[in-house]
Length: 409
Image 1: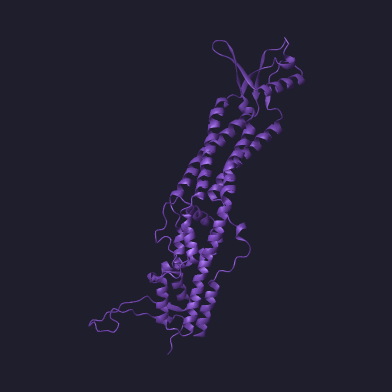
Image 2: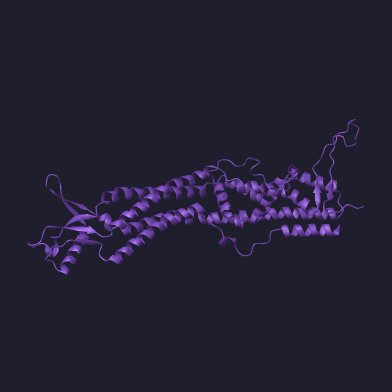
């Protein structure tokens, strides 16, 4: 008998969650995995490509190669290359024979435009960090702490029930008192549950989150528009005619008016434009799908915590429209599930409850832990005799016995 009770006490002591060592704030993730991946791709890809572009520029030297007249010296040819790169104007004649020029400035500012794109793609993340991350961090710390405390309170309740049973309290009276406490909701967690309910009427976090994703979609669309409108026009313009009768060569009569030039880095420009355009076009539906996930509740975490006594945010249908701060908090709780120590314990208990043949007799973690601690609580049964004269007719037979105690001969 004493060994069974001692084993039950040890089991309950081990079931309690230890106090967290250090601050949880350093380990919380304030960005969802999908958001982190999108940020990494949208910001990292332009930076990677611009580094390749600058590496190509430094390794090959001049970005342009012009066919100078044969009588030009090396310094004169370098001067022609510099003049044509500075102007980057393509001179041509129309069908009427009139001279016309077209600027190829997009090719010249291309590496710097990639830097601007990378900085712009980081703006949604900055918006979330400075507008919502601190508030979300406080919410997560409070809710995680309260969830773990609620689990510990349930375990301590079982410890108290075991002590009452050891002190000789009538099992039937103990069961009735526990059943009454459940009916009158003495085990409520009003602070946590009312806080979560209050978050259903708050829309700040979800507003900032939607604004972040809408800004990201706008920047993706603006980048694709820039690539389509400005880059397509010069996508095949790797050669152009450059006038050289400017500056020191303005009055030279023995040189031609223009020379053909070729852009050395044009292949890098084409490959980079295609890569950024394709990746950003594919990221658009990903962001939209991620936004649509806010239109449905993530009930997996709350359904597990229904094992706590009187914690029935789902069963009382308190979950209304999912576009509120509570849904955002639930998503981030799932992302920080490793910090919620009680979740793994309750998940195991839910799994064990589902595989039991008499799982209808186990509603909460208190019911399950009383069984493990050595107190088998059987739900009321109705025994009807054939003659109807039994003293237990329409009465409840309540039994509370030590499950770990061996039968005496």
